[in-house]
Length: 270
Image (cartoon, rainbow, N blue to C red):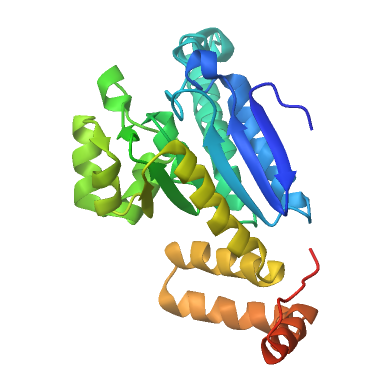
């Protein structure tokens, strides 16, 4: 796959997706939104990729949506009929939402490794990841309120489920900047690392531990946790019963049992 705004590598079953517009502070232009969808579809469809890490090149993670892209939306949606113009804008917003949802839709776990600033659309992006980790220099801002708009591609829907409604409201209403330790305290990130180098090494170690597990079981676990977020406990229990009726009796189960009995590392099919 060729990407205009990302670099994507695969090593030891770990795919690394890097935002690669450092000269533009990794601002999310139109090409990047499309590249993210392509990259995480590739991760989903590539058996050798068992887990993915998302990180950014340059001095920060991302400055959020590219303002030049925002200013260029008018001609893209313009129609002599006002209703059709508004319909086109709605469809565009839905498309951007779906670009980011590709992380959530990907069957493999996605770990976000955040350094420096993560602004605006970057919050929308990282809330789609399975887990978030950051370096001590990281900072976060829901910036949309400061440019006179309501965040519309996922932050307001996903963040309250991660950190609670009251804190999500405060951050969205005020647009205030908060740092790595506060992000950990509110459970936006799982862990804070002392440096960017330690962040990448630590997240890769976590990714490697995931990649060593049964790929089929990891994919099922992600499916169940994501499903449970948006459904009742009864719905979730019913779904896992159906899922395991179909998936439980796999070669992975036998291999894991034999490996545990013989005290060796299990070897699983991709």
